[in-house]
Image (cartoon, rainbow, N blue to C red; front, side, top):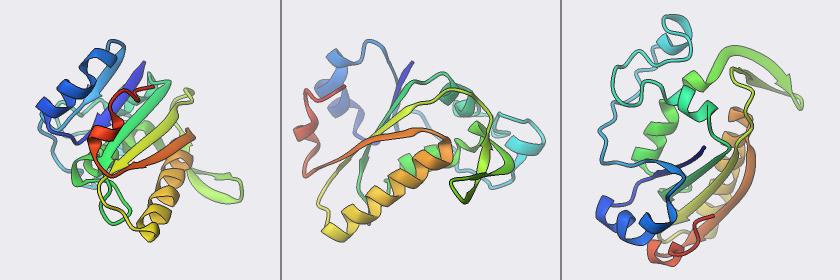
Length: 166
């Protein structure tokens, strides 16, 4: 499965990308999402599933089915937009609470065996410092999720992404 997580306005996204999404699962801000509580219930009470019962409760399981993840996000000070950050926060059931040593660093153990390719498209005005920060963030997220960081691109305007869907 291929997954796109985006923060674009629904109508805008549909106009620009609808013909290119026949085999993509889409997570967009049109579906309300509760904030992660940091309760670790997804690790202790309901392993692998979030205890918050909304449409994102099984996000870890959904990610386990993905071969490719594309994130389209406004670049906010070198990070993801609040919506995308919230989706990633709610994704912690995807990994175990236990730690392993990976390349000399401590990381959470894998819960699933899939290996996704992560691509990120940032848009909006960004400084060089924000771009450096964003590149490091994407690399760190890929390592933490046991994914391959397959590319980060920066666009001044989301319209520049049109026709670029992998």
